[in-house]
Length: 480
Length: 91
Ligand code: FES
Image (cartoon, rainbow over all chains, first blue to last red; front, side, top):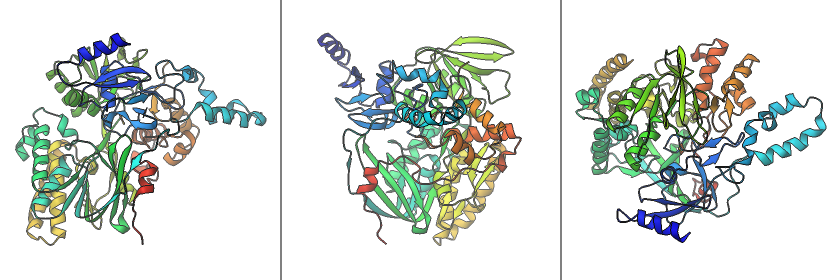
């Protein structure tokens, strides 16, 4: 033990001060910028917990707090998302739903006998034997479940009420463009974003983008994100990061949000708005192939974030899944970072000639099976999935906005009136509204802001809005 | 044969969804109740679109005919303590 401590101390010296935490009793050394997730993976722990039914391995995937595959217990608090939780000195991190540990989980036998833990399997498997049902139910309830009861209390403040002329939910390109313009025009603007750093997907994409360059004069999405964040700040936008907007109550012009302060503390935020712009962005579409849940399989954003934010060294090959422009951009990004890639490939959901049909590996991915007429096994360390994305439409849908299937993106979008308006005083923008390219996403944010200004009685913006709307329509047709 | 997971929270496989559609389930809300999709910690943020696509394909629907399940707050997990401490609007 002493020896181990010594080596860690020496390893962490003299670069920067190291933070020590533990994972299932084993020591993990992290640097200040790490999240619990990046720290665990840098130390070689890819399995954070087990899934709640079949006890399959679960770990980091989306990197931005929504997939919930990375949940761990921290100092007695269950279901903490490791990917958006900063490391703190002495944290005791434990895996969940595993006996005795995520690495060696005895209950993973359930993966081999799915009937045991499926109510449906139970009904089908035990016809007529009603008297064993209560017993089996009790057993199921013991074996499956999510985390332990909290051993500690969280620390939650009294909450805060904010009045905003404009509330913008989402600080990606479209939200930032809208918020900064409106603040520059003298409105009182509040912007909330679920991540610690503003900029959405764009922040993690440093490669040149022709559309952005032509239409908005930014070299890259990353530069646009940085520049717009700076503008929003200097225009006086009230910015709340690490804040999850969880509910929209349109009859009260109210958005409820949760400001996360640490893994065990935070406060409630109620924002009363006059105008609301929803720019909540999009989720990523999972890859469809056998063992698509092995640790080491991540979404585009999560994978980029490890490299950009956490200086994670990618050793070994990466298979890229997805056939659209996002997969090509990810492939180019990885190649520029000196990472060896294979693909991009299709998967079971595509009719491509080259498809990943399975991943394999014991503790994490160690390879893929590619079907291209014949089957090939290719050894890889990671799989990065950059398929479609689909709108984060919960807030709009909760508020009763009609949803419409958009064949271009293959998913539902909130239905707007042709002028991005979904409710009397609510507009949508960015990928939530179905815009795909960076240039369109940014432009739609500006457009939503123009419409708000028009609603505020600023007639001079009506003409600008009409011009931008028609160029955006043309742009959409081009990218579609 | 390894499993192809479509709902990572509730461990629902591609096979199970296909079988359910064959058995006659034709609505996401019904599939949700039957299989548990969309009821786990991510609340459908990963599975819904995939399941909708499988449903459209297996049942021969046009995807635009598919109705999404009802969305209710919270859109993101919030500790109950946060709500308990919150000063909410009195009206
Ligand atoms: S929620 Fe943490 S990786 Fe998705």
